[in-house]
Each structure stands twice: as structure tokens, then as C-alpha cells.
Length: 233
Length: 218
Image 1 (cartoon, rainbow over the protein chains, first blue to last red):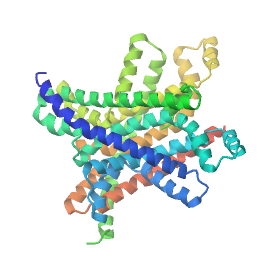
Image 2: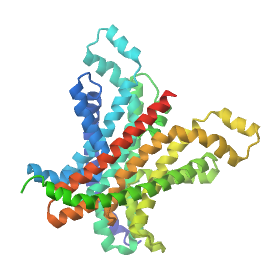
Image 3: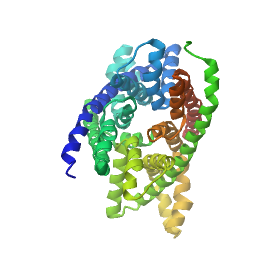
Image 4: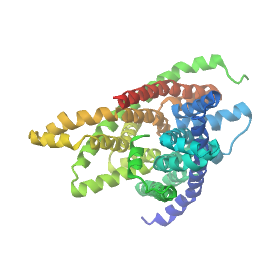
């Protein structure tokens, strides 16, 4: 226990890479989810096909393989070596964006038909219809699922230690365990607690977003949507 | 040096396929743990025993909120301090199984909650024992409903097995890494490893989607 004061700072050094990877990954996930998710719903067949290939390709393979492929194979093919943390953010975003695309697609399709008809009757352009009528309602539905997805993403940041990112996992396993072997249980407990704190923060932020989004469309956050999000993964 | 060497690709394929069997073995055994333990958690939590219920909730939330990789490290490196030494393969099966049991328990819970109240009341009226109510009335209705969701988690587990390369389990990605390190050619092994995952999990997910649609139609 007397090593606690030396263990905690080393672990804290791993926190910025973990947080940067998670935040960067989440940002990319949001962009790709909406991009690919809306592309899955367009009338243009070739757009749908490209989006479908992206979604199924990333959902169908293992995240570790994707990480190794982008970090080790891609440089051989195109001659660009990505910085580990950046490669990690790209993989986290691409992988979870593929899952997020299905969330967006499902939520947009769950908006009642009458809402489309109403928007058309009011002579709104297709863009206005999407931005002002459909998406604000769909977002309320998708937030609980995105909460789960972002926590998955946070947990996935641990695999960046495979490509030498000095995140919490790397600091714990590569730096602390070899030097403070006697405190191994303490080290792992602290590592797990760091991730727990971060996922509680994500959930808190998402609950806040749920309330804001629900208020904007004049609703209360629905318990049903959250319950449905647990079953669907 | 060509970008893609077919000769080399065919040379490494048999070894990767053999390693894929290890991946599948861990997936199957891990799934058994996840499906059984998840059901146990769901049924026990349904009883709402005061302290036990809160304790189980906390454990489930803790496991769900922290990375599987770190949990696996814990099982592999820290458990021996408590006198429990497990092989890497066993750690993989238990780690994967317990982690996903926290997800399947939520799925079972949703399935159990969806069984109408009248079914419980009818079982009580027929004075069925607690055990018979579960095995004869509730679960036969709850489980078929949630099969697609459970199937999706099995596919997720399959894709998470490569994490175990961290504790040197020779599954398919670790094999690819090993082959690549020996020859300094990574393109073929990693690409084939990725394709093997796709070839297995894409048809499986289509199958599950079809199952889902058929349930929705009923």
C-alpha cells in the first residue's frame, strides 16, 4: 500500500491517451454513424451499396484485426505510417461508426410516417424535412443506444496498448506490473476503477443529452427507448 | 516485392485455419459460460433478495463498464496471488464468458419481463412449484424471444477472442502475427485473418437477422 503514491501518478499519465482516444473515437463515430446511417436510407442504390459494404465489413471483422491492418499493413500498401494514437482513433471511429450507422438508420425509420407526410404537406424541402422534423425526433430515440456504443468504444481503447499507445492499460501492464509486482492486485483494481469512472462520466453526459434532446421535441426522456437499447446491440 | 503474394498466402492459410479452430473453440466454450451464467444471474435477480440483488447489480455494472482486456490480465496475472493459477485458454473462456454473461443477463431479463403477468398468475393458480413455473412456463416463452439477441452476442464474442493474444493464446490473429514476424510479410496473414472473421460472422448475422424477422412476423 505504501507504493500507492508512486503507482497512481504513473497510471494518471496513461489517462490522457485513453481520454483522447475515447473522445476522438466518439467524434469520428458520430460523423460516420450519421454519414453512413443516412446513406443507408437514400433512394440512390450505389450510395446504399457503398455504405452497406462499409457497415458489414467493419461489423463483420474483429477490431484487433482492423487495428493491426491499419497500423501494420496499410503503411506497406500506401507508404504512410500513422502515429499509433491517431491510427487507434481511426480504427475506433471506423469500427463503432459501422455499428452507429445501424442505430441511426433504425431510429430514423422509427419516426412515424405521418411526420413525413406532415412535413411534405407543409411544403418543406427534403433537407428541411430531415433537419427540422425527422432527425430531432430520431435523435431522442438513438441516444440510449449511443450511450451503450460509446461505453463499448471506451472499453475498446484498451486494445491500443497493442500498438504501443501509452494508455492506462499500457501504463499498468508494461510499466507498473514489472516494477511493483507485489501490488499487482492494487494496480489492476486501480486500472479497472479508472475505466469505471470514465464510463460513468459518459453515461452522465449522455443522460444529460437525452434530457436536452427530449425537451427540444417537447417530450420526456423515454424509459422504453432505454430499455429497448439494452436488448439490441 | 509484390504487394500481394498468392504463393505465400496459400502457404499460411492452413496454419491460420488451424488457429481459427482455437478461436472457435474459445467462442463456443465462452458462449456456454455466458449463456448459462447470464440466465442464472437473470433468474436470481428476479427474486429480488435484498442485499444480494444490489450486490449482483454492482458486479454486473462493474464488469460491463470495464475493458475485457484488463479483466483478462487480472485473471491471468493477479489471480495466482490468491492461489488460483489458470491456463491462458481457461482464462480466455472464463474472462469472455463472464464478461458477456453480464450482457446476456440483461437480454434474458428483457425476455422474462416480456412474459405476460397472467402466465405467472396462472402458474400460481395451478399451484406449480417455483422450479416448475420457471422451467415449464416462463423460460420456454422468454428464451425463444431473445434468441436473436443472444446470437448477436455470440458473434460479438467470436470477434473479441483476438484480445487473448495479449496472454499469448495462439488464436488466429496471434498466429498471423507470428507468421508475419517470421517472414516480415504482414499483408497476407492479417488480411486473411480479417477475411476469415468476415466469412464466418457475416453469414451468421444474416441468419440471425432472418430469425429476427420471422419472430417479428409472428
